[in-house]
Length: 104
Image (tube, rainbow, N blue to C red; front, side, top):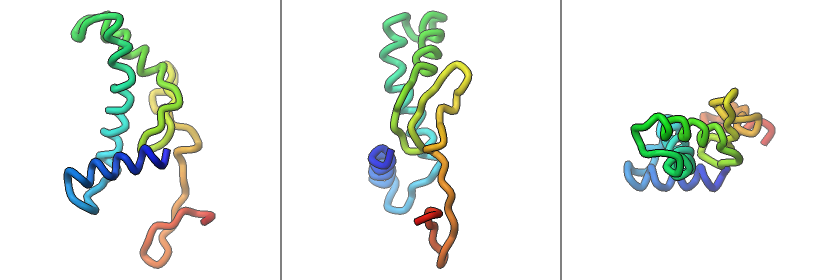
């Protein structure tokens, strides 16, 4: 997961300047990674704009497993469209005006 987050950071700051990274951009980046994996699968079932493609895209997204991204490792399902588990949760505290992972 760390490598995926650093790849996002490098790409985002490369396009927008150092220190410009935001969590909101990370959400979009993660969605893009999920779609990069799901779209080729869906295209085997139908053309974009068709019911077959939409159904296949949803199924492929829900079938996403062990995808490292900037916010965690995604394991989607029909019952879980967040896809993030305990590994995506961290507790932080502010020490001396800076973020610090709890327990470190």
